[in-house]
Length: 466
Image (cartoon, rainbow, N blue to C red; front, side):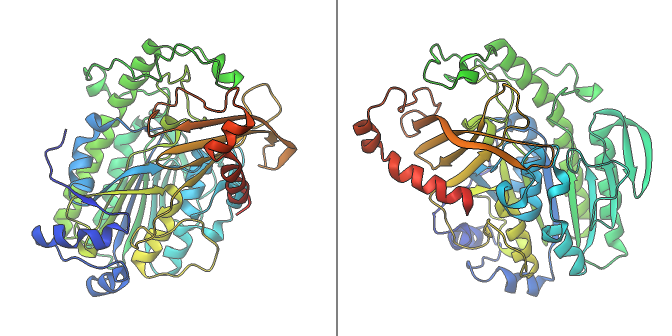
């Protein structure tokens, strides 16, 4: 574990809370309403946004250099989530600051549903930022098509070795390990800051730690720390879970293997992030670069027998989430315990850059004091097969309520079905963080009322259309 010292930040917002810690660290502190003023004094910040693929929490061992920099000289969000635990919907929420039910990318086939006018890259490019994309973009995006609003790009057709790329409009195969290629392309983009005085936005998105989880050769045999699972992995009785979870077959051995493979791929990401830090330091741009690191979704290590994402349980939607911006007062190494999510990234970036969006956003800037008491997490079944149903969930720090619906989507993300609620779950996270006991299983109406289910169901219904 890192030896950095970090100060606990209150729910009223980490910018107010970092004042004392920042002063102690000789870093200028700012208040919740003064981020734009700070940015103006220092010049508009550069933006480095790093989004990994399928990276769950509890992967700290593999990204120690990343944590030491971005969290150790910034902020660690202890309650980081994604609002849809699936790649394309989550990334579209990162770009737009919107829930999937609002941006329309409800599954991995429906990337075309994203209104490109709503994206953070559109706002930044329009405001004079130099914009670059390096790595994965959106599932189902045609590799031959340029990603809108990126001035420079190396767009990866997902893979680890000798993959196909679209480099500034030219589609070709580039030999080598893709995380290293992404690193080098990003470093070249950063180098141009020596002669191009515009502020820049780099969206950097390696394929790690997505399956097949192929490590860089130098890390292929690396030993990882032993892991003996967690209670959700060795859960003996799943009779209170929905049928697809009762039928899940993942074992502790599966979880151990997936975890080890993910950690090995993330070691190369950690090397890349260190290289970015070194380059920014050499360019004199380390302090006034807003750096954000997040996983696009989590992943199950055989929790409840599940070895994937797409489920309402914590390992699928809880993700590592770090931010650093020393020139904006966020360089002291603090902890923020607010409930935050991928929908907050675009509002945060635009707030730091002094840009007011003219399209709707569901997220809120993390530079202010806003603190939500719960989050909507949602997922849609694609097609009419027999896999698990569409669901949505009310998630707070101490409880989670889930509804499954008779709904499905087509390749365009269009929703069909009766909407009938087919199954429900409720977990008391304060005493049952591993979600072992579904308190709605065989519950009486009186027990449901005592749990507050009517109010939770009403709030979830409102969130789903909000």
